[in-house]
Image (cartoon, rainbow, N blue to C red; front, side, top):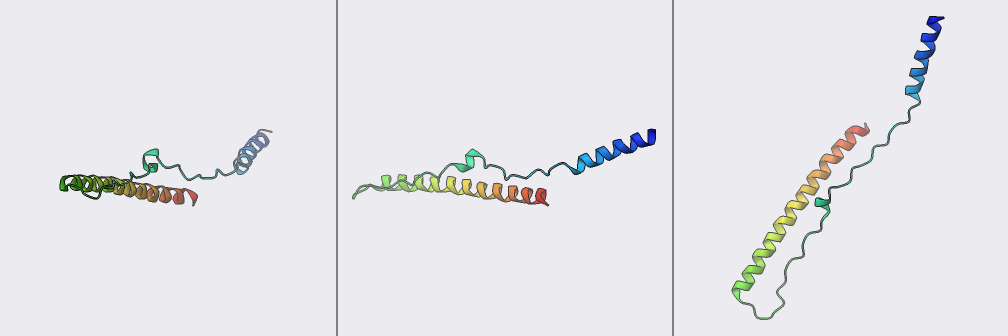
Length: 91
């Protein structure tokens, strides 16, 4: 009787594991910091511009470009790592 009970309990545990539905992996959402659009570059809207105004605009645009470039590089790195993790879990 005891062996039959042990057999039934074992069978119940094994069948319970087999009936579990697999969990579907979901690709993670990107961090909000990486989802921000890049700033628009400044334009000079005058016909005549002083050299100091021109250089200030150019330096500001270079700064905006480098910030945007770093943000895009971080986005690509995040995406690449998350895709590797996602593909490893899916196998």
